[in-house]
Amino acid sequence: MRRDRDLEQLTGLVRTFEEGWSHLDFALLESAWGLECQHLYYLSEIFPPPLRISDEVRHYWEDSQLRLERIPVRASDLYLSTVGRSTSVIAFLVHTEAVLKGFDVQGFCPLGTGFRASAICRLHRANWRIFRYVESPLAPLACLRRIYNQIVSIDFMTLALWDRPELALEA
Image (cartoon, rainbow, N blue to C red):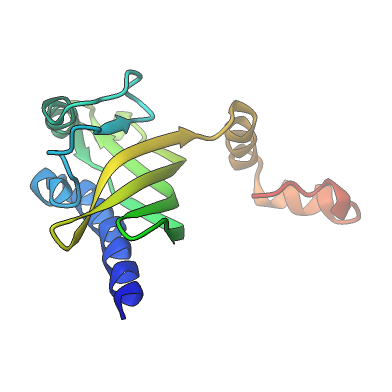
């Protein structure tokens, strides 16, 4: 069935996203993109202005490769929806952990973050390609809650919440 093939290809785009970033293989990452599309839009969480032409996207990836030692990327909670015959929407959560180049590993703790990603894909020559992509960071309060929750020891958390389950915070 076409729908099954479409869902398989769309899921494959997300896996290519994970693999491309995790291995800093931007040729692989580019294979998931329709960079030739005239309506290209790429909004990164860390690079404020939207990137609208393929050279800008490639420059962003090249710059990332110069700055990153490694960055394992995991996508989860994948949502796929086809909108007509040649357009689909993908939404997913992304978790990354990064080590930046130029930092002494003993004196530097790797960075980790999570964000939401959404992509609009188009069917191009029988293959789905991303042509609109947006990363959305979590709200500041959600980020602070995660930071503060990580500071509290498990022993204290267990003791503090033993008789007060209504105080338990979401992870």
